[in-house]
Image (cartoon, rainbow, N blue to C red; front, side):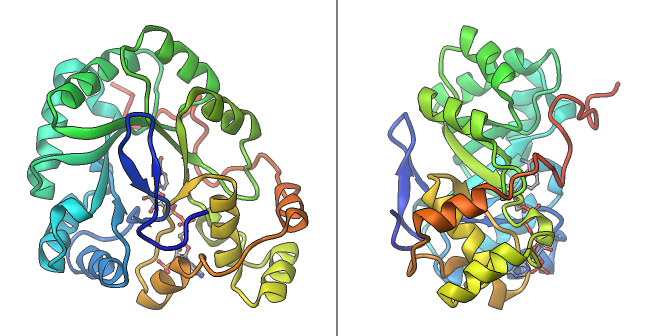
Length: 280
Ligand SMILES: NC(=O)c1ccc[n+]([C@@H]2O[C@H](COP(=O)([O-])OP(=O)(O)OC[C@H]3O[C@@H](n4cnc5c(N)ncnc54)[C@H](OP(=O)(O)O)[C@@H]3O)[C@@H](O)[C@H]2O)c1
């Protein structure tokens, strides 16, 4: 088990990825994102998860520079937006993201959503970026088992990471087992279901027993399931709270009770019906 914010999991290509990072979805470009990312880094976070569509890559880049932490000590993820899928358009979008971030290499680049018919062509561009040394690891996001099966059938390089919605209401057992079998690291987005789980009575009871918050219990549950997690907060006290998950352990019974909260319910879109950005 990881014991601090700098602990990492080894991806199948040998790259070390931190177990817990800061997400910046819906964090405003400018002061808000700069302050959040700086607060996280000052409090020991080394992993930041953004995306082209979040519109805050410049602020993330500025915060990285102003943090004073050496670039190579950080792990930065961004994602290719849906409208940019395709070979040439991916290469161009990558350059644009890098320009905004002000970085000369990226740690992890993800295909944000599968869509229907372009992800294989897009993946070829990802493989090129990887082979050219522009990005240390490449992966996907919101890929279901059938997308992964289809991609892996022809891919030269297997995705290192699959970032999906994952929380006690969406425990993704089949996908989790599949990714484990294939050596693809699962990463949780909306681990707190965007705040919708904080009043859950079972989680509250377990939290009280451990003298922890519900958010901390959920994030600990992610880690004990071997899932990388990236909670979002713009508030420094919560950024700190979300990182204090290394000093307690959920019992097998706690884990089981949390697993049983599953409802297969999502806060975000279903990967098979997500159309935003794919419409012409
Ligand atoms: N790949 C994808 O398609 C995808 C989709 C969605 C998200 N993501 C990534 O995953 C990250 C996390 O997901 P998310 O932002 O959707 O939701 P989340 O992390 O599940 O929840 C964030 C919400 O919870 C609140 N919160 C955070 N910590 C808290 C705490 N300790 N106590 C009480 N409330 C707390 C935040 O409010 P405050 O900010 O006010 O504290 C915010 O409203 C994103 O930021 C993004 O990087 C990826």
